[in-house]
Length: 430
Image (cartoon, rainbow, N blue to C red; front, side, top):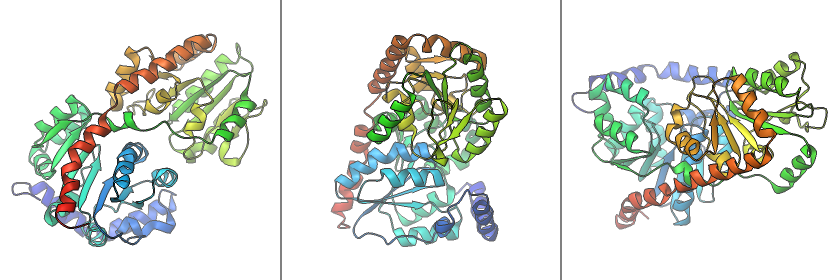
């Protein structure tokens, strides 16, 4: 990529030589259900759609969280008449985007970072401006965009201390990568400082776009139906859970059921394909489970309702007044608490929240969330909150106020990229 960066040149050569293996990897992933078999060509750089006429802006988010965070920006761009290509790398994100993408935007799966696939992709789409979300640093894409003279911006940029330490071991490679970005819009001052220390020459703090994302949607009729089915029952939810946390949620239900025999526990796993395993665990523990993916409703006989579907967290957050946000009792780093906060839900979380340190700190300070260290503490906190609906409502309002105060990143991001959009029109590419 850049003189003095042999590691990245080695990466480029290695990924070129590994092209046949990359194709095999995609076939293996398809067999595991991790790739959409009808769109596997997109992962090799073959376009599934025609390129629209005029200027095209490309935005990329790795998975569900990153992709959802850039949707408000996508909507702003399409409102201005700009064609937008959105890419992501997971089936879950593609299914989510299909429901929320505004008119004037196209979704494709991002190709693997293999030079042949990258060339195919860029030859077809010919983006005039590219934006990667959070911490997406793919060497071959960065190199190819730089060679083609396509401005590249890192939006909603995030670089954890752990990632910083990893990149700091290869400082020349990090500087060679980051110097190719027109600029980086960081989520926080800490992220900005780490990016600058690694060699990003142009960095500013814009804030977190996720604070400006709308609350997750839900069909009002479906909400009313589920509310009617659960009326009169104490309800809590474990959202975006990871392995180990479902077992904890089941243990919590069993502990609370002595005090709340009519309790309904809802679990929405981070990866919905694990729904069958979770239901089996619940049944082995003596609970009556039901899975939403099978079309079963949580009637009075159901103890544990598994929300193993895509794009329905907005529905579940409107049913449960208190939610434990997963990825935090296990050392994953925590999942995003902004969506339940926007819907006025009281939040509980474990100690492992380094993926969203500033967000959780703000909601904790506002007393919209409570940290718990293990399943026993989670059960104790839930017992107190379920006995005090007024406190749950107060916590929910505090959580909403905390995230609303942190908004504004969308406006700052739009102002920062506006000169590039004006440049597209000046250059006569519209």
